[in-house]
Length: 343
Ligand code: NCD
Ligand code: ZN
Image (cartoon, rainbow, N blue to C red; front, top):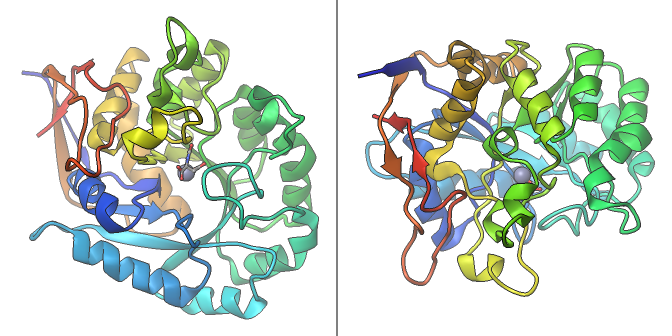
């Protein structure tokens, strides 16, 4: 039987929510990943160190007995974040980054930043304190075509941020385009990117061809095939600027299968298996460990994990749903076969 053993990976971009959904989704992540960067876009958002520490406790309390998993907390950057909170975060043991959502760009981003240049003093503070800034890189402009929003953000905002704050450590989250890959490649070592499993495996046909499939709808939206190929090349290149971030974003099935469905793909149920599937298509399984287990830890200046996980080449079918009857979640590629399974 074919197996693949790698250092236990980490997930550098994850939504686990709170309350009942947290209890359903957290075990899926914790069985694979040692650590995860936890997104702060709760309702209300996690904007202070004390809220982040309370959220961290809630996550730790939701872990199944005997499972080791470390949540790495982030704060939601707003126009009214005080500089003092940035200093506090720099000194806080469990806070690792700030997240910048352009206001209105994605799920729970209403408290995000409407005018990025107006928060430059906050970016100065992040640069001085050497705290990574994680960016949802899309313009929220309703007049901009949804498939162009990442490219336009890079041209209009990100390039200015990078020029004005040359030492700011930035992760361009869940990149989806050739332009993003080129931008990250052309930038200094302080600029990195996460890549999701769905953007490595699927193009926009998965959402729209032969019927509308809401469980493949996330933001930034899946793009054309040539973009997927550029992402696959970046992920499997061995370039440490690109690392694993699932952006697993659970929503109740009822809120996705409706007139106006939420953005977010749930992938935590099989994240590592999905990445292995993508890497195998590129004949690059030997590159999975760096992408999944080394490069993110190096960027965040955390020790690499020492334990290992093993994937086996065996076929299984992804369940159609997860969760209890009141909290049903439909995973990405529900009902499909996968040919890698975590032991
Ligand atoms: C995320 C969510 O549901 O919180 N949705 C998504 O489509 N990716 C938010 C985000 O990361 O953009
Ligand atoms: Zn996300």
